[in-house]
Length: 238
Image (cartoon, rainbow, N blue to C red; front, side):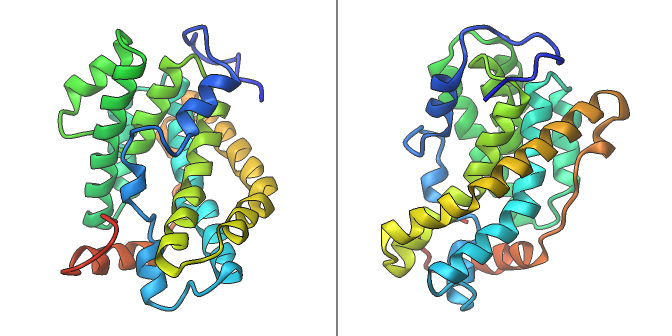
């Protein structure tokens, strides 16, 4: 996987190994506590088996996943984090999702600063957003600190957008982990395409501004997130 060499200079020392560290579900960024909308979808009967999980993940990948991937790519390319955070806020209508995104961003920033200490971009982000920047923005800066490029960051964000719901569904439905992993494998070509689209949008944003970044809507995810936030008992934070 090549990094984008036509962007602002990024730290050296990254590569596929650093990408795997950042994308690993065991990276202590808090994602394990979030279902990416899967818990609400299971309760609503929209996810019942591997086939419906795949359709849910496909929809999430091409909407919320695309947006997250583009913002992560833009942050990794050196776009102003404050501008990106404001644009991400505008693309997140549901207060519950804005809260979740900032909590995840705060935890990711904390983890990244421990793993890649001394990075000025992460330090500045932490100072500017003590309650957390939107998670894709934090992810892009973490990728940059790890020596990764915009396309790498886009791949991580796109993968997270479907990896989280898939893992959550195994716990929620007792779905066979082999079937759940097969869902991810079948969606891999689409994930690559989404990452490419996201990186291309991030490149345009360098001259066109944040308006060039995607704003794909996912109303069911937004509605489900608000309903889920009001549940008195739930397995996942979002």
